[in-house]
Length: 221
Image 1: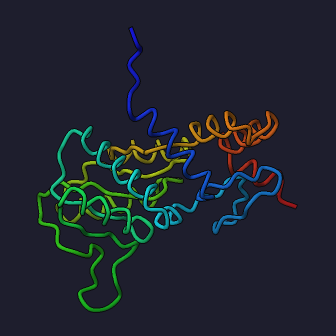
Image 2: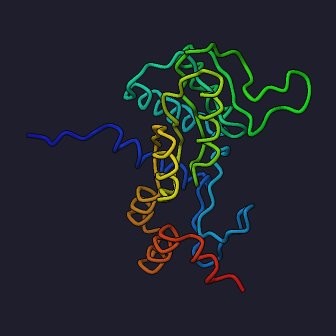
């Protein structure tokens, strides 16, 4: 009997390979990046790059559709988390033929002073789309903004997650479901299989993921 393979398992590896191929994800354990927060990191992720590649863009949108199909509640609308989640959400909303909105990081300082742009009705179920989950802060804040407006966030879905424990704890505390198309461990597995990483580099990347702040402090002059 041929063993059954979950299509999402194959998709996770394919999207990880896609992100590496187009340098949406860059691994640089010997020459770390500096994030906007000041944190040093051997990984940099910019999933906005995927928008330039129609085949990859379509695969990501189909993946989001698959994830949404596995959630407990079918959404009435799709919302993007500003700003990088907006184009991804637009692609998903178009594929599912659902209304689209987006959630700002903070309320606009003029006009109607909206935090949520678009039109979502109270009581509707809304799936939130992110490009990346790091600490989970922006995702949870967007979900809480929807709740404050009387909207039900069914889940936060993203292309990639670093898999930080702090993010998982933040989602759990807020009672917000979340899932991603691919993740850090899948990325390492795909990179190792492709011969893109040596054993020492894998150890460096896993040490960073286990405690990014301590790792950053240790290498900062």
